[in-house]
Image 1 (cartoon, rainbow, N blue to C red):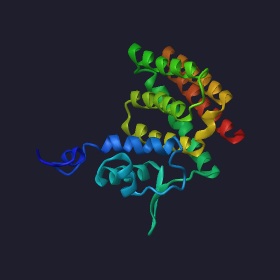
Image 2: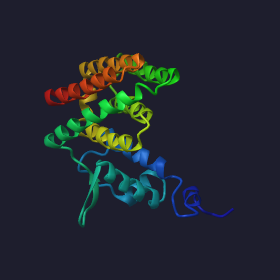
Image 3: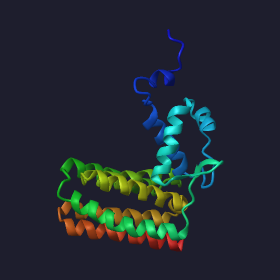
Image 4: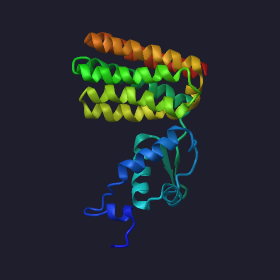
Length: 224
């Protein structure tokens, strides 16, 4: 036996950690769920200990979070979870509405029956959860799954990358939005409209439904 820890064995070859994507997902979820609140320090040693991994994949994950706009780096203080203020969220959602519309319009002509079934399954899970106890992290994750599937189906990597950052920042702004049963029901209704438009195969209908959903989100965030 080599005596190396599993994570050390995973870091080989060109030095890129095979744990990187997994560690990034885990830290990202801590941020989006609010467990690591805005302003929290993203200490590489502390996170490595918490997750039971070496520092290298954690360092890479924190850099990725900075790129996504979920973290910021400050001189002499290291990285911390970003805080998205009112002005920033208005800017984020104004751009996201246009790009979400573009993604939905493009995906409308590309989605297969199997793809539509997967989207329907996410919506079914959201509907089932309406009668369960509030779980903001769970509901936020389902929302991200719904939108990420559509953006990836559009087949435009540049578009998908930009939307991923914007969606993450929107969730960071008010993750507690999912604690409201009314907000969850309205979001579900809007998701259904997007799916119906995608099922029709009409790009313009899909664009309108997707943009309306983001505008509705802006209204809910303001009221909340």
